[in-house]
Length: 179
Image (tube, rainbow, N blue to C red):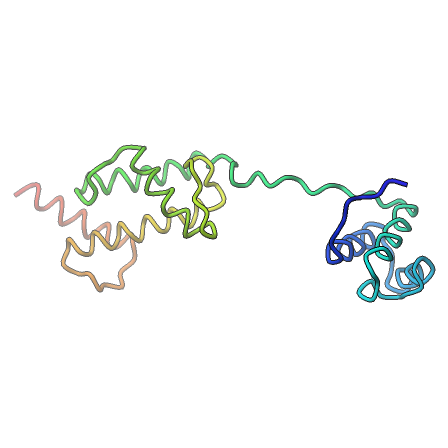
């Protein structure tokens, strides 16, 4: 008899519920099977050995547990258009004189620091691995850009949108260059 190394009661209960759904077992039949296998009608009332016994019964009925896929989200590549958007906002900030370094390395360092706040305290070390937080990261960069532009425009408390502020800043910037 091959035993899966499930040590946790909660995991076993969840797996039993997955097995029930996978086998298209209605509530009544599920409880009858639990009663027959373990003498109890509720998985919550069972001990770990009883839950393992119930799981063995589910396997006899045809359930095959599939191991959970390893989480590769932290290393999923950042979509090219998301990376491009980050780069566009970053280089625009540099062109406007709002940041000193327009380089990719500077953007990556900023993103690594920001990833701590967006990834439950854990920094993501490569910009390309930030796919899961790319949307919030782009929005955070745009909010920072907006704050810097408003400060330069002398309007730090404006409620205007990012696009409106960008347009105002560009109008001001273009007018000043022509003078």
